[in-house]
Length: 173
Image (cartoon, rainbow, N blue to C red):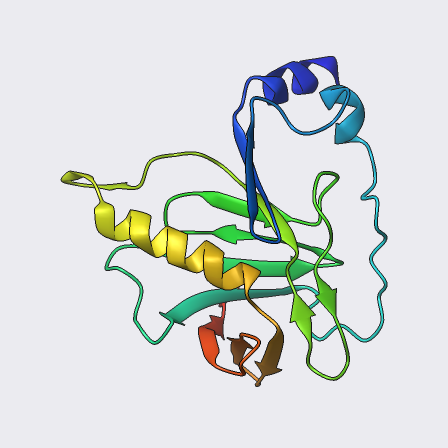
């Protein structure tokens, strides 16, 4: 457990909470090793959550297809969620962030997340297109207010009711 805490303290994290960005050389906990086994501060309330244990792949981001060669995903599980931005791993609802909030009448809120800090690159080197896509994707996640769920499609809307993210159910191998 101590080794894991030392490892975590050497990784740089970005935490985004409802639009506020902060950088920290270690997770925001007094003792990183203690935080690994800690439960989230806000408990997940397992009312009927139709997103629980589901995995999705993004097909449109604000009306545009993802940059060629990038895969953006999101997976929901008991208040926690994680995914890929095409460049980095993103997650929320762990000991350092608040669980996603969902209601039976279609409201969804992702109050914050943590993200790794790898550069967006492709075969030619730095990729400004992937970097811009990642920024657009993470901003869109923070602006989610509601969802529509079909058998194999998930649409996320902003506060104006505009569909900003469309996903298809991820095929399980």
